[in-house]
Image 1: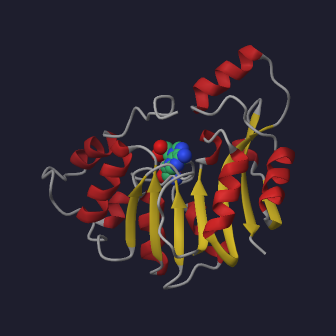
Image 2: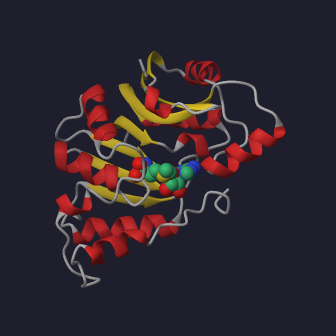
Length: 231
Ligand SMILES: C[S@@+](CC[C@H](N)C(=O)[O-])C[C@H]1O[C@@H](n2cnc3c(N)ncnc32)[C@H](O)[C@@H]1O
């Protein structure tokens, strides 16, 4: 799986930073400059703001960012709310850039903990989380049942999860499936919204809210925003 979802643009952020005058590889970076470059999803920081709002994230909350990429959403979240973020990222090369950018933007105090590992198996400590956010990650993970169960088990009772993800809107043939897999670096068995809802309920989630923005629609898949509560 690591081979399949390897990102081709991990180091691009350093090129972008140089173009903005950050020529010292170890130098400090203004977080406001960084936030324009480090969000690996659509619509900049908007989804993270939505997550903060939907989950009512407050100072001191423990929040898990699943598939944190190079740490963009985690840094925004920590700065906006002063919550404690655990940024879990599968690929070491993304994780390493995330750690470096967090340090260079002066956010390497206790509010962000970077953790490299697969969300299904990573050691995330003993304490439960008040909230989980995950922006455009879940479509990479094959075993959705295990993924949702793991997330449910990581939440405190009453905790909630906010995800932005893609889902399949119709049946597709093998050729279309290959295109989709290649295009999205996704798993080849992308779930429909109905299947996703069933799997979430099986894991124990309740209060499932969906919002499907038109901007994300394409022929076979759509994106959606979802909030789930662990009841
Ligand atoms: C499209 S990027 C989004 C990154 C980040 N959420 C953001 O919006 O900036 C998806 C990320 O999920 C990570 N990922 C995929 N599967 C994962 C897993 N099983 N556990 C942890 N991270 C995973 C990928 O390595 C990648 O960095």
